[in-house]
Length: 184
Image (cartoon, rainbow, N blue to C red; front, side, top):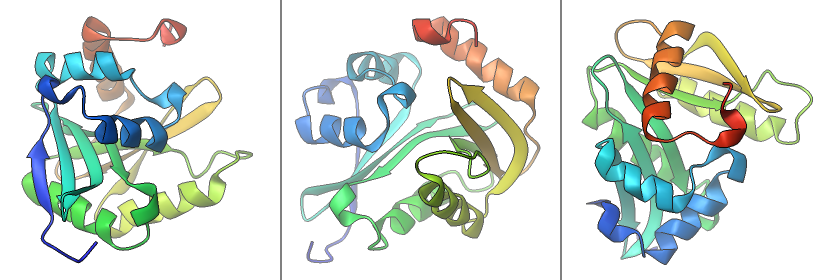
């Protein structure tokens, strides 16, 4: 990276064959926490997801997927290419995302930094601190799937409750939901 200007590309179903983008998505998130690629690309159009890829010097830096909703925007996925982590690029991307949704309620769920034992506790704590430093607060709403507990964080006006969580899950179930979470 030569420190060139970061550019954004809005991702559509037509980008389904982008192997670099697919590889970042598939390596950045555990299989149990991601929607299969083909299903995700279908949902990009059906759910009007804000799927953005970030490039610097024509190299893929990261990706974000936001589910814009009337009551809040769900920051669904956020990843930076592994060799580029720790260089401030994630901060640049999150700042852009926050600016895009400025003044609106935004939520995200992340692996809980309070769940012990787990094999990535330090990573979870760093990620939690990153979001706190960027204006998010812990809602104290938690949800467990399988053996992973997720913490819901929020920024902007309003509150987030378990009822909000249940509503968004019901929306997702209308478009996609994995069989192993059928009872969630």
